[in-house]
Image 1 (cartoon, rainbow, N blue to C red):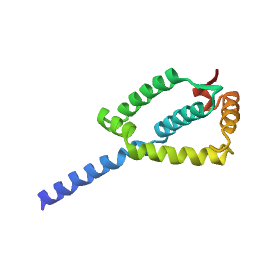
Image 2 (cartoon, one colour):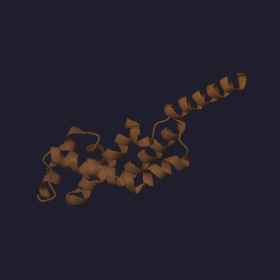
Image 3 (cartoon, one colour):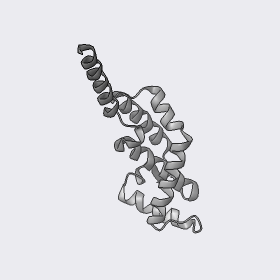
Length: 133
């Protein structure tokens, strides 16, 4: 009986520890920051008058990786999240929906420029990763 109680306790603690660390895609402070950087890059690719602040993006990505490690995520978990085709597809779908909700359209490329310039003016999370050429 004691053995069963101990096994149950250990299993409960292990389950609690697993629940304490959600997938990185669910860690809003990391996932959103990566999303804003990716979105800014896409805007810069579609608008010839805007450039992505790539050094800032890479620097922030390293900071986010450090933050994730301090939250208990391993380097392999972080790499898997960053390189995952599933996560890339999810970010693309999320980005397309976000841009469309703001009136940005691939059929009208100048909407990327208008939106990007407005984000720079606002110094938003997206605008922080963009600059005018």
